Image 1: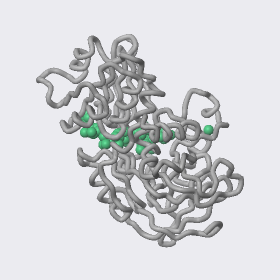
Image 2: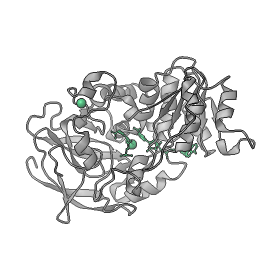
Image 3: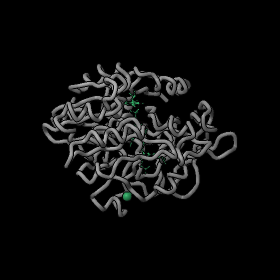
Image 4: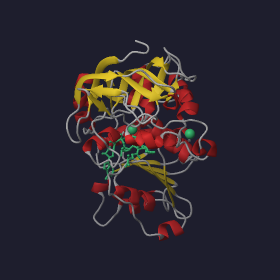
Length: 376
Ligand code: NAD
Ligand code: AHE
Ligand code: ZN
Ligand code: ZN
């Protein structure tokens, strides 16, 4: 197949708000500094549903969604040195070139090298490698993992140990790494500090896992779904609050301030709800509390609070992919999983075949679904 177009199955989003259509797609061979991957497994993340809904200002159609995928390198284009055919890999929607201003800053994991073309749904040369029904199909987040084969930039892929099954390593491509990194790399939660996690989906539960690793004090889960109490506790949370069940006149920020003797040291939004983001900031301790925005909000949504909240020392920040640099740091997270130091299996509640991918999207709305892994 090297150098030839491959025809395989992919789930195509022809238009916003419509179910995905699993059908034949032609995947062109990788050009220079590109890698063609046979995707074995992909998770379905809330962000895929967000873009499919039409609320993502960068959303463009027709497109092959998916950004939480793992598989094996099928072939590489000219000049590719970081992976070779047969390597087990995880696709990276946050690439790492190591050369751009961002990569060299030492201050961020956001790489600028291909962000513009990635946001437009094309490869760095401005074209697509996917064709279906004779029409070009766009790429998504530089990864497009809802396909049996995909093509990515070489800086958007990392080789990991083949000892890790791809149905587990795929989840390190987004949800688990995002929450875990937000707690350990972005916030750098300290021993004994009090933490509140708003939203206990895959991302929020992963924040808990990172807070536990860093020996946080109280880890309070805030979720509108009571089922999330047992999920939070399974990952090491110490407390649970359902904000819809507080006594009248008591806000969630007041409740958290009372529970933590003045406010949390770190709070995390893992919901994408801008009202929740405000509560998370205002639940922080005066003078030093930090709130980390992880959730992705729809076009037009904005955050607000009284500036006094910041004047009095609370800090608002955010991160993508947890602040983790994929090519430098993901292989060791995979090793941590294999060594029993990072929970991954526990997140997998549902499984689907590629043909069942629309069911996976349905299941994501169910409070009992943490992650559905799709066997492509
Ligand atoms: P999810 O849907 O599995 O989890 C969200 C949780 O939030 C659910 O348990 C839900 O009950 C809870 N929730 C909803 N409204 C709430 C409210 N008002 N108060 C408290 N809890 C509430 O989603 P997920 O896959 O864990 O993703 C979470 C968010 O993070 C999404 O917005 C997603 O797009 C975003 N995300 C961002 C990054 C990043 O790099 N920044 C990466 C992955 C996901
Ligand atoms: N296109 C959206 C932005 C969505 C967004 O913020 N995506 C995160 C990853 S979410 C993974 O589940 C991200 O990587 N952000 C940094 C970046 O460069 O996109 C919008 O609202 O415009
Ligand atoms: Zn994601
Ligand atoms: Zn870079």
